[in-house]
Figure 1 (spheres, rainbow, N blue to C red):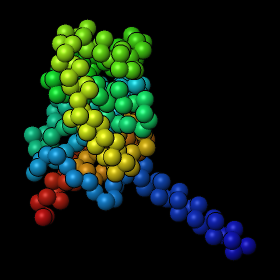
Figure 2: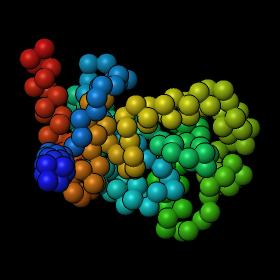
Figure 3: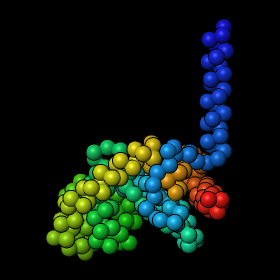
Figure 4: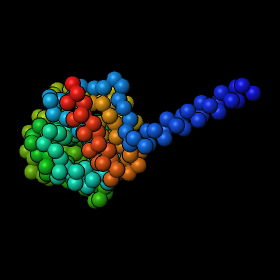
Length: 207
């Protein structure tokens, strides 16, 4: 009898914990992770080009970016849960290094999810870059570089440290994880981001 009651109490506690997470709209990351934005508040989007939910989230985060506060720095980082996600991570870091993210990032999402193009491996990614006027030799140099491989490894490690279980995911100042699951909808994700930014501002004032 006592065992049954204990199980019931445990189930209720877990339910309350889940409700708290859903109510707050975020999960606290422990321990908190370092940021790359100095004194500014960092908002980091973790994504995968092959993820349809990430594609659907793009309009929401882009709309939020139109009114991003000046004290906030926005970054993106490819998520890497499986080996076959690595080519897309390399594609992002290559586009970033070559300063062509503006014409590659959204276009790659659209090509995969709207146009249904199978761009998932090194060869198809190379073809995509060349179709977008990226020099063949410059692409090869960066895509296969040690620098890109290092960034891929770092992204994998940080994904583990953030305890990310799916994408898209937003990390606010290395302390909080927000997703469609925690916030309830993509629209709510941006609202929670704003609340956490204000929370961080207050924290900085106290310090």
